[in-house]
Image (cartoon, rainbow, N blue to C red; front, side):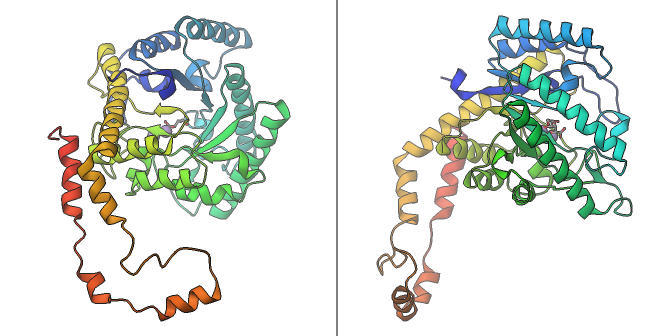
Length: 386
Ligand code: GCO
Ligand code: MN
Ligand code: MN
């Protein structure tokens, strides 16, 4: 019942299962997992695909010959396991060159290097078959606004994306870009901190149709926002090109927990939203195992992400088929006793009729909505008491 299928498009970043458990206070707790082994682990865990930053696969200082060998071995592992690479991205945050940003750095040479590194990473991604290219501007921010004019930063970021859209077209790569927002960490403040901000920014680009978003559960949660609403807005705008699934306990450090680890209820409504909307893109997990885990725990983590999603998808099906729940929903959305006053487009006569319509305000305000009963049914359903 909870078997992953290709149609679910479950993917993981190479960096997720290869995370060695290092944090700002402590060293690695696990051995580095070579990319080829990560692919095998993901295949065993039931993944459909694997995504990567350029340097997850090819070290930043690798020679051309080393790159060729690494890519050859990686492709062999993909062929052996059947995994695909639907998404690629650039590491524009680890190297000290990017300490003050990549595309928004004050240093024009850093900005140029960021463009070069991204074009090369796009070449690599295209070679591996990726069709989505993610932009997460982890270092695109400040600790102090004394250091950078935020309007100038937006202008620089826009110029870089316009250039790279044109590069993708010029090369015939057919990429769709997906912008990933995060409010902070590693910078004190990161520009364009939410999915909503990204959606507004996309409209200012040369080729907005090529660009969408990659919302992440943890990131919207860190900003204190409702992730389900952010994803709904992206869907509504036709811009949900990719999604980063994980979990997070409120506005803490970026926890990147296993999907379903913390927010059962929001995760349920998220899965229900994606399933009901017929979202056809990859269901990508951007999370990592607790620092306490060894290699076996990492596999438990990957299996857990997939299993939690599938269990919640099954719960969403139950919700949609439950007569009591559906009756309550029908009641909530029942037509007004005055008849359908909202049908049709604007016309002067409709406006006049609506202005003249008497409303029993007291009755509207006094009516109980039954939401307590409905919301308790969510709990009952999720806890298996239904
Ligand atoms: C983070 C981000 C990253 C990005 C990744 C791909 O908070 O570290 O979520 O994991 O998703 O760099 O762009
Ligand atoms: Mn993250
Ligand atoms: Mn992410």
